[in-house]
Amino acid sequence: MEQRVRVHRVRLGGSEVRVVRSAPGPGATGLALRDDGHWLSMYADREGADRLAALWALAARSPRSLVHLPLRDSPAPRDGAGDGEPVALDLVLLHHSLQFRTSSWKEVRARLGAGTPHTVSLPDDDLPDADAVDHERRHHRTYRDRLGFDVAAHTLFVVGSSTAFREEGAALRDFAGRAAAHRRRYPASPHFCVELFPGPGGRGRTRRHVPGSLHIEYRDDRERTA
Image 1 (cartoon, rainbow, N blue to C red):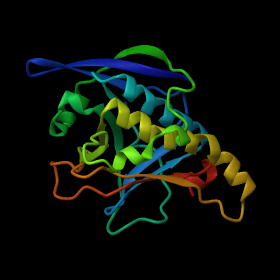
Image 2 (image 1 turned 45 degrees about the horizontal axis):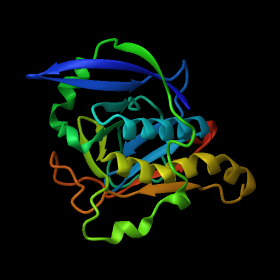
Image 3 (image 1 turned 120 degrees about the vertical axis):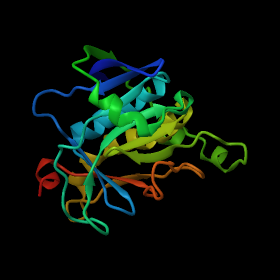
Image 4 (image 1 turned 45 degrees about the vertical axis):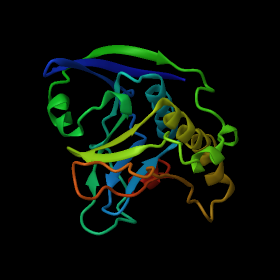
């Protein structure tokens, strides 16, 4: 898997924040994300699903960086919205050890600048197969490798350990690999999705309520903009 990115370094207080920002080719969107109030909805075509899985793997490998997907300008379907007006969001993936204050993201984002272009190469098997994940471990009281969600500055933050990103990323790898074929095989029942949930205590502090799950649905180009 190869991903084109731009690397940004921003001084914030006495420290430096490193942001790796997705840089898709001209006209490439493939992903949209919105806050529907009670849940978070993401829509992905085949290219978008592959890009999301690759950047998820990059987040697992980059404990000192924020991985940023600018998505607020991507169109999302208008169906299935929750209460109120849905809000378009960006996505940031980051390691919990950074202890990054999401309330400071708006300032960091405003100071990103042009950044430096890079091409990141990731092994195709960087995320495990879904059946290779030991789900029984998650029931142990001492298990801590869970994702946390927060929403701030029109951005969804997904926070976790490298293990959490790899294990949850297995479901994204499976989703990306099977979505288009499922759509062709079952045209009368086209809905194909994966859902990610934060672990206990995995809610953010920047607002009273953070939606309880991230629902990612496969849509081809025509369906995503309908």
